[in-house]
Image 1: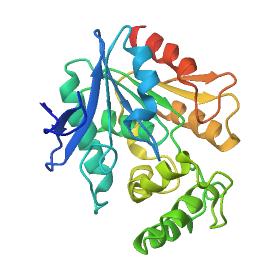
Image 2 (image 1 turned 90 degrees about the horizontal axis):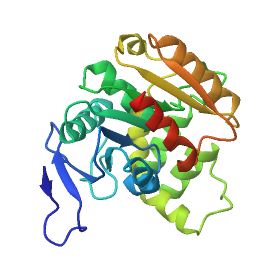
Image 3 (image 1 turned 90 degrees about the vertical axis):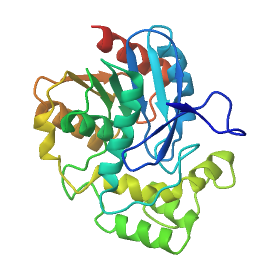
Length: 264
């Protein structure tokens, strides 16, 4: 582990992934370690409030996935998902023995994949991993259309497609939120690589650590069906419905669930 170079953000830590990519992360608190992995259109600052809540009882590390925030730029190559798992493994190594994982959305997929691949983690909390169980949920043309928009540097269209499936302008364009999503549009190629094709991956059955799969009580039906299916596929996994929550779960709602499972 090293500090960021001179002129970089104060207090940012860095580590190197297996392929040499520099991964930036923050660290806070004291206690059993937990690493937080974010989903699409997020850098590590999206979970700053969650990290602060968990740091009351845990050592928390939360990081920028490659191509985001203060981590190195990256191109989604043939094994983009594998590279992202290696990035998470590098942060887990910085956290130390017994580290647990919390992942949201595609970050949940990464957390589960890391556990299946044998990254030494103690437990995993996965909030709504976004697998499509069958072709009635996903649009098979979405990925090539988003990738084409990215290849043509049509970042606005890439974001519109990923969110709404079309290229019509969205109501919140021109806001700071839109600007942030547009800046992270190139990382959508990693999102498709990480989540993979339709259906649950067979490696879920290989996970041998305790897992809690969480869904929002107000989430879309497909997300709830996926959460239940994931929990039913992982040996011994728990399944919890968080009342009143949607895919964008409140930090104050999920923090005690994470803390309770990690110390239970």
